[in-house]
Length: 375
Image (tube, rainbow, N blue to C red; front, side):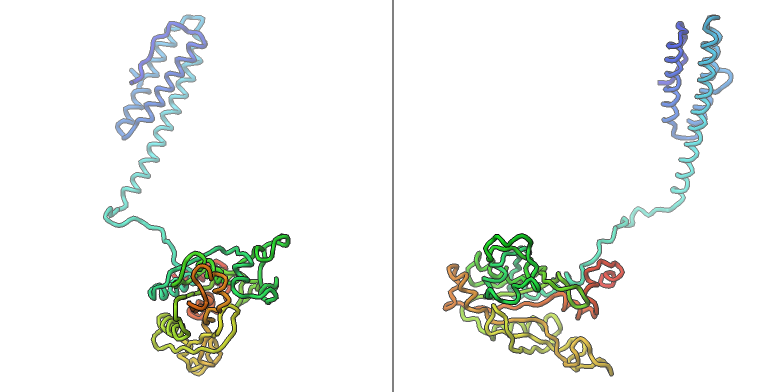
């Protein structure tokens, strides 16, 4: 509602204070509703016009109509009100001009509303995660399921149930990271950071009866000082297949197919005898160097990744030791009736070779400049 000048009958200080306050509030409300140049001009004229402006009406009504004893107080209030109304109108004009300039700048830019909006880049897979997913995908196509388990494990699942004897070097603190203050517990219940993803094999066999085919990707920890080729935290993928009449030939055929799927159909595989506590017999799998093609040379220079041999060690594998099945014998894993094979590989090392990176620590330092190369 537009402001009209009231006729005063009470000229006390409180009444004059109330009247001037109502006038200022009405003027502020009118200023806030201004939308265009015409409304701004009408607002200014309505309040400041000499003949019939609101300030002129206030001067004629309040000051001239005040009794003699109240003229001093009324004159003070009217003069104060004039100053505040002038300041209000000046600030309103200034704000309106500023908003108009911004609108002009924005409206002068052509905007095609049919274009898609601006999207923030969502990044890309880390090279290690990408390598891990590629490996897992190969085995999923062969019918394997993905399993996982806790990173903080017990001595039982990490060592005892995998046929590691009590005096095995891997149980030493020089190789394994143990959780503090575990000395009061029985050895098999002591907590540690898993040194391989093999504990998930035992946990899965406890839950599922044969046949099973699983791959197990995940983080593992060992007490290694960080350098160009070692890290206290790294990634592994292990696999386990258990059924009746599984042979070493099944293991060789599975891994040969997987390596060709990963590195190309021209890759050849080679098995060399080895030893692991939880497999017997055991072997290390080598593939022809996918960098030099197995020649041992890159042009006239020696091939460093394969050390000029033409072969690269990829993983360890073997037939599951019957002693491991004894720990889950009651769930259908009688070593006289079932057999199986297992394998495990380091994802970080494969990523190093695949992307020709010479320092493992680059994968874990979070340098965006380095990681952008793989986006």
